[in-house]
Length: 325
Image 1: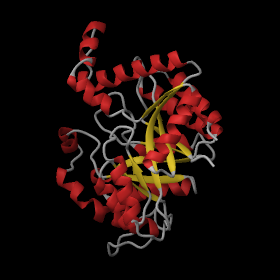
Image 2 (image 1 turned 60 degrees about the vertical axis):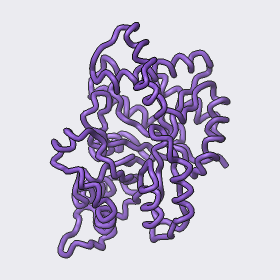
Image 3 (image 1 turned 180 degrees about the horizontal axis):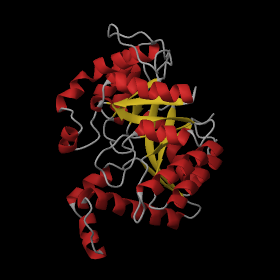
Image 4 (image 1 turned 180 degrees about the vertical axis):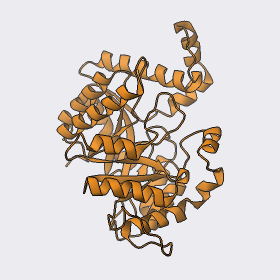
């Protein structure tokens, strides 16, 4: 049987688009994923990024859940050092009570932003050092087994919202293994440690109340089109948009200036982040994803459908789903 396919959505704010329009696109994407049989859609917490509007995953999940019926929705992830565990338990406990059996809680240790924005969030860089204990505290609230005397999450207590540890290094892999939780690797933008991290997770996994066997979700970028040349065009446009967003930070470039930027070492580093990329016709991408799944030793693939146009994103999802068996 084919591995489950899921989707990560950044609520991308495209050129000449408002944030509200990006949220409408997220609803359409989730409805499309539900119709096509994808397992889940996750939203990533990022801050101070003009092209990413998913800074409040719990709020976005609530909105999308109200406009879908069955598909699982979750965070990919909530950056726990930015929040108190109790607040996260209450937020996701609320979601679980409103939409039983449909809510996931992926947790990351990175702040999802730059140092200045981290300060604006009223958090310190040292907050990440408490991540293992914060996960335990959060888990206690959701199980109604609080480790903080006299404190109970309402809503949240007893909802047992399933947790997943996100990561791009050995730290997250080892923590997920020690806690007996699923592990999701952010290989769609941090490819380098994938194989070593998954191997460490599987070799060190300890069964838990939530999970008896290790479970790996690996993220991968995709662009699928009926026409190989069109897929190549989409890939080039996506690469240029990604480099422009990260290098330019809102600055506009002429085509000639952008060509020079794309030839720079900075662009090479950014494009390396997209190393795991399946782009082409459906058969080509399916073949790539099967090889990627073996390479990643994955139990589930979470695709990041990349394109500068929403219709192309939806088409990629549909073509892939129709050829994935």
